Length: 273
Image (cartoon, rainbow, N blue to C red; front, side, top):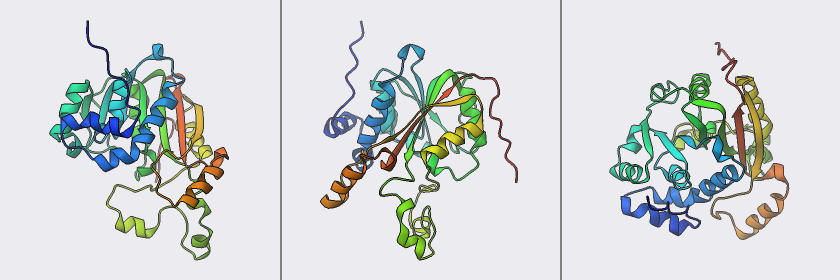
């Protein structure tokens, strides 16, 4: 009889200690995002009927910080990321120890790393803090995800809420000075990343996004989440945030669950020029 699986960590110190035996990891990133990883897992797992399937595809898994939580929670995780991340021995040791399958994908736009995965091979696809970074037309990616997701499976999307109380939508001074919305030109040229929050969404926009992609998709949960990151504002600003977050629409994070109700129509969008 196999030993029982250790529980999902509930504190950031316990979480970081879990990674220590495997070697180097991005500790500042893990510390900053631990609250998000745990909140996303709990929000989904609290209402998911596990008899419907436990096979998870984690797109953009990085150092396996999120994948490990889901695997430790009893799910069977396949993690997808760039070769630069999965080339680290610490990531490989963690994956081997926890039973996480690694799939290298060099470019989400072409999806070549996903092509070898089986049809209907997953019950859950995690798109956690990914959709706002997509600077390319995403239709080929969604065709692959539609193919890989089993009927009645779900896509879990987390992303910043454009209408958050502290979001860009409320920067009136910037608007009046003629500096537009979305990410700033300063962020574009100074941030070393792939499309840093290139496009942030509202809850209604994301629901429409999946309606446009396919009539097979049905958004079954669309909720806002309170701030789950470590404090980074002044005490007075944090107090204001706690007050404003009583209004659901002003909370800083979105959590959507999109069900593949049936596999009949496929992705119906044909991008043009």
